[in-house]
Amino acid sequence: MNLDDFKDLTKHVTAPAGAPSSDAKLGGFIAEMRARDQQARRRALGMAIIMFGVGSTFIATGRADRPGAALTGLGMVFVAVFMIVKGRSFGRVNYAAPAREFLAAAAKRYQYWRAEDMVFTVPLLLTLGEGGGLTVWLTAQKYLGERGVRFAILGYLVFFVGLCVFGWIAGRKQWQREHAAWLDEIRRRQGELSNG
Image 1 (spheres, rainbow, N blue to C red):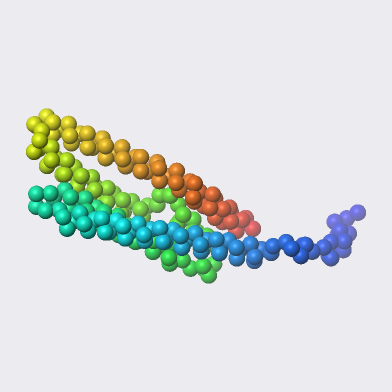
Image 2 (cartoon, one colour):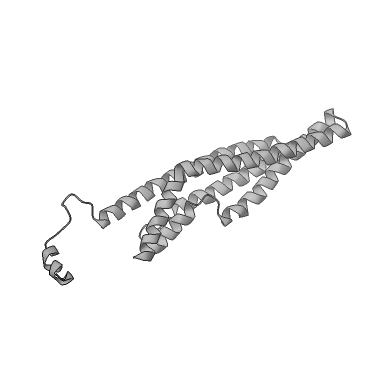
């Protein structure tokens, strides 16, 4: 028997009526992507509103004798701007783009740490750190001697760096819980397109 003999036998074989077509699977994937994008956008914009309100309050109440509070408030406003930019990236998605382009943009959106994030994160952390450090330094000068001030600043630096590391680790774990499997699915679909 030759392989050509099997062609006649398989001409009338079709998928079961209830089996989802590839168009239905793609439609479901896009619908889920849309829902996830909207949820991420709402979360980012909600965080922006909160951080802008708190930051504005810190700036408004930061008097000349408390410049650290104003600087910390400015850092929080930077966080709000960062969250707005992040939220807009989830709101401006072209779901009708070609599949390769659409999946590449989705993979970029759902990465945990992108190069674009560094543009905002480094100045943001420096501003927040400097504002907190200035507050600790001014407060410590009022109540402590020179050696106490140094220990207070050193303690603050250890605390701030530890807080940044903790925030990165906690954020990574949350991202893994919420988005890692989704990013794997996006990359799997990218691989299918590349292979097939």
